[in-house]
Amino acid sequence: MTAIVILSPHSLPLARRLRAALPGSEIHGLAGRVTEAETSFSDTMAHLRSLFAAGRPILGLCAAGILIRAVAPLLDDKQAEPPVLAVTESAVVPLLGGHHGANALARRIAALLGGIAAVTTAGEGAFGIALDEPPTGWSVANPAAAKPIAAALLAGEPVALDVSAGDAAWLGAVPFQESAALTVRVTDRTVVPGNDLVLHPPVLAVGVGCERGASPEELAGLVCDTLAAHGLAEGSVGCIVSVDVKADEAAVHAVAGRLGVPARFFPAATLEAEAPRLITPSEVVFREIGCHGVAEGAALAAVGPAGRLVVAKVKSARCTCAIARAEGTLNAATIGRARGRLTVVGIGPGAEDWRTPEATRAIAEAEDLVGYALYLDLLGEAAAGKDRHHSALGAEEDRVRMALNLAAEGRRVALVCSGDPGIYALATLVFEVMERDPRPDWDRLEVVVVPGLSAMQAAAARIGAPLNHDFCAISLSDLLTPWPMIERRLKAAAEADFVVAFYNPVSQRRRDQLVKARDILLTGRPAATPVVLARNLGRPGETVEVTSLGALEVDQVDMLTLVLVGSSDSRITRTGRVFTPRGYAAKLR
Image (cartoon, rainbow, N blue to C red):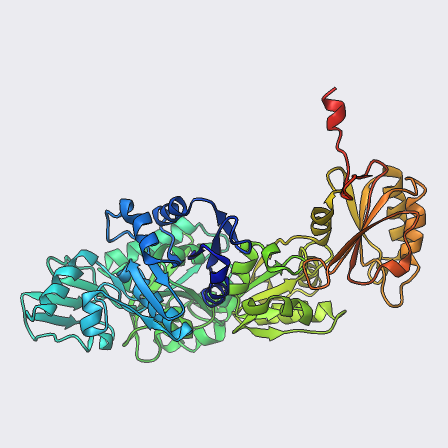
């Protein structure tokens, strides 16, 4: 995860732009100066060193000298160093890790900001490319060989190019000779490189199949052993592919993760279209899922009509694999579909600094944002560049179905909720709809719930510590819960003397439930019990007031108010703060 390091609030607007544009990044701010940051630090030099030692890419919105002096004691292995860049509005300077992503990142940021990327590595300066930083999907078998070959090219010495697989057009600016003592080899074979630089293009598609619940180790072992047995380089695998009913199979994703490539999936009808090209068709497989071969069919579908099968189906106890070679290089993003991901995200009450780093990452990584329009607006710049989908207040099930359907198309979707998604929000409705309306494409999705700061936590923090002993939350809306059930819970809370957080206390048509709830609680606690009325928490117009249970009136509350009622032990301090003792005084006697 990229760390955007800032030392003053002046850099915060730029940091926010970078975070919105770089999925998985987060802002690290100097404590005492920067308040809106996912991570705070007090010792700048020590923090930069810890990030560098952990291999974290660093974007320093500060003087380059600070970055250099911080990481200088750790510089010992060029091949292992992460990207370190000094960034301003007008220039981006990759200081370290140029061939490990820093140069490419510099160009991307410069394009975003309309500035320049001050790339200083010799090869890129002369030819516009780096031999040890090939295009996405390619891999370098022996990075150490890039330096002497680049040096030879810069000195005008002859270097040859040998291409036996893939499209090496990106090397076109380099002045290669027909023959030379040094060679850049582009191949999908495992070779002993010697002094040559070996580049592996993404030309192999590995089709896999497995029984439900097969061991990830078994499938990974089968794939890697099969590649090795046929002299094929793991670095030339462009994707792992299978039939869509395997989109939620852990073994398939595990082998893709081991090889560092995407997993992509096809419907059975697409694989069946490859039946004439299969070497080992199976009637059993056809009867089960509607195609005559999964491993071979998926591999062939991935490489297209011009590709060919180079390894027919190989079997282990519970798994199969086959390998096909494309005529050119593979772009996994255009092959089949990814497994859809639905992340149900809690963004807290609204303020950016109350949003967790995990929620920020989930929003940054999403292609589509689904939610009530107000919640999407609260994201501000974090929603830039995303496809937005919203529905009216009260149309919660419509939003859930929209999010599930988008994810079923193989998209990364964030269903945005205020507060915590599991507290009177949409997380439970996602699972309820999936359970009530079984659909195989929904069942195969990756569904993740990201917690958020709840309104009752925010209200408690604003006023003191009223939730520090036992408490409960009750929604006063009878749209989904019958009032008699709410009333039973209110009576139980009154009898147990819980601190109570009231969600949905009133609406335009519901004006009497709060009064009834107040009167029920008064049967179990004094009229002087403190009540916190927190409105628009973390948003413009925020107010936090304290009244008493006996004085609570419905006109003091609206739909945007969280009502927090203390227990009989809750107290108001001399300075107006509210807290609920937990019993420490008795413990210390």
